[in-house]
Image (cartoon, rainbow, N blue to C red):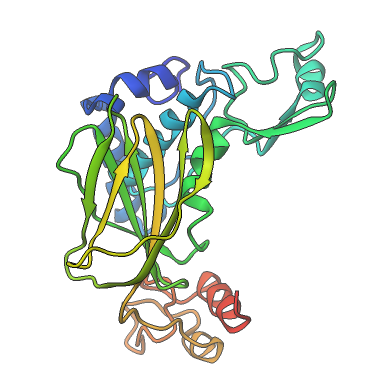
Length: 289
């Protein structure tokens, strides 16, 4: 907010950060929020966004919000990103604004995640929902930590995460160029193992599964990013620390890294405290989930 601003309007996101030119004043605000949250020991997140100005089914919305999410993680160190409503519909539009609800998927309402058209008995995911999914579908809630990541190409953006529960690296790659890009993704101090999996969205197909492929001889991830696409890849991290047991979490429950008795043994998500999030991760791991 306000409507039409750099990170509200999808077209402006594509024209600024999407061309390698994020607006400096908006970056500064996010960095200030990051520092304020850190100084007070709390998390920072994007609570709500709406009025993208792009129809819900337009692929430009998916790419714009994927860029937006990338920037919130990069500049604000956000811990979460929320759209407008989890669900919106033609009926809700009519009850809220009057009329027949025909604008329920318009540019003012398209940032709700799932949209229902009762007149055609159809439910579909918005571009914002698909953008969120490129991150959320591949990360264990509460267990993922952002890793510093950068790109040598101003038109290719990358967000990387260490999912401690799944013991893997997850990266979301956005190619904003009008042509394909051949990229190599490597990580300092990390070793990968096994095959790479993932999914990709383009204007012709959303969340299309990638055929599993091998690491390069040097142990890196090499792939081609189609023009104006969003791609998620995941690969196991060799030697990653095991998820702590439920007993280990309970033994350290309530402790933080500044406590004399803190050992880190129960800190499943690596945030320097042992709390309900760690217990949930350990419980899921014990159940094989």
